[in-house]
Image 1 (tube, one colour):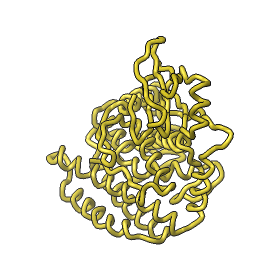
Image 2 (cartoon, rainbow, N blue to C red):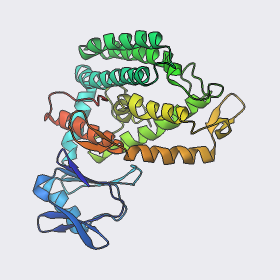
Image 3 (cartoon, one colour):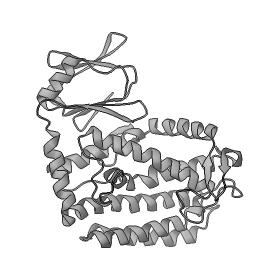
Length: 343
């Protein structure tokens, strides 16, 4: 259990939450393990199945404390709402800003800034750790290109121009992604991004990672009361979680892509872990997907120090903390949305 930004994150899978006077009580096997004063909390997010007592749910609803439940893997399940749902004000603000191109650009440019910053960070990390195994000069050129884009992105005021700069940065980054692959080159090489279907093992791994990260981001946004289908950079499209795609932009390089690179470079996957279908599609086998998911969950339990909050937390909570920061920005508690900048 961890309290961040006045939100209680219950990451233990076997903890039951109840109400004792004005306190949230966390119990395991009927033994109290922690208690937190309700008045210090603005939200509670539980990643366990035992749940919470009706008394606590009612108290949270009356006090406007967001109480949400996710599976241990991070899939959003439900959110407790009282007679007057305060989230309606947050969502109305979200909708108004999404309809305003200038306001949309203000939020979106922070996310794109985070994406390009983290992509450059990933390149620099490989240059530092594997200088003798990569084309350092080529990586340095692209790193400088991405660095030059950052001030342009930070001052951008038009969405179309912002998308152009994001596209240029992504093209430069993916142009050297193959240089970051140090595993079996006969199986894992990257030429260009392909999807629906992925056309090689690297793209198959990337697509699966993006799918998992997208679900995590959607769950995080829904848990804080935002509409995951109404975005700022990605515009409305039926059936598309546009805001989840926005949020995951800054997290792609450091969570999804870096995870895929690590599994390849550590030789977790081999050629037998992929099926090659007619039409050129390449997919993970069932056993490989299970291995991927196991490693993904292990990665989410690893800790880091959040660059904005300055506290340690598991990687799996990063989308939830960023969703909280986005909600605070929309409410006016923060002047700008602070993107996740990987250190």
